Length: 244
Ligand SMILES: [Zn+2]
Ligand SMILES: [Zn+2]
Image (cartoon, rainbow, N blue to C red; front, side, top):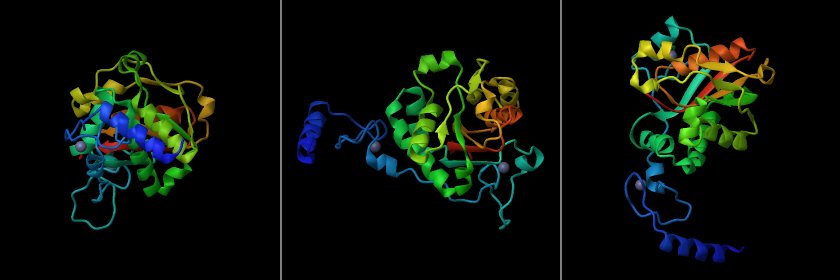
C-alpha cells in the first residue's frame, strides 16, 4: 500500500473513531497515537540525579563521589545492578497504572522502548544472555489478561536480540500486592513465592530481570536469590520506574 493511500485510510479511521488521551483528554490526531497523546509521552524524562551505584535509588547527599546507599551497604543485594527509566511519579506513574490496571496492553510497545533507553544508557546490561520477566501468579495473570513485565520483556527481545524466556521463573504463591504492605511485611510476603522451572536455561548465564516498578526491592531480591540458587551467573535488573 502506498503512503498517500495509507494516510487517507488513517484519516478516515481517526475521523470515524475519534479517541482522546487518557491523561490530558486531548484529541488523538495521529493514527500512531494510542491511548496517550505524543505530548504526554514527551513529558516523561529519565532521572538524572545522584543515585546509588547498585540499586539506583536516588541519593540525597553532599558527598560528591558515586557510592552505595545505606540500604545496599547493610543488605548487600543479590543482583549486580538495578536501573529504572525514571521516578515513579507524574505521567510515567499514570501510564504504568493504565498499562497494568486498565489493561491498556498497547502501551507496552512504547514502555518497552523506555526500558531499552535505560539499557542503552547502562552498557553492562548488554552482558545479559537471557531476559526473564517477574511473573504473576497464574490466576492474577488470567484476570489481567497479560503479564505487564512479559510485554516489556518481549519488546526488549525485539530491540536487543537477547532471548526472552517464558515460564522459567514462575510464581507459586498468590501473595497480596506489595503496594498494600509496609517495608518489613513486603520481604516476608514474597518469601518462597517464586520457583525456577527448567533451570538449565539459565545455568551459568547472565540474566536480565524485568519488573515494572521498584519500590522496596523485596520482589527483585527474592527473584534474584532463587535465580542464583538455580545456577544463574549474574542478575541485572531493569524496571520502568522507581519510587524515590
Ligand atoms: Zn495527553
Ligand atoms: Zn542502593
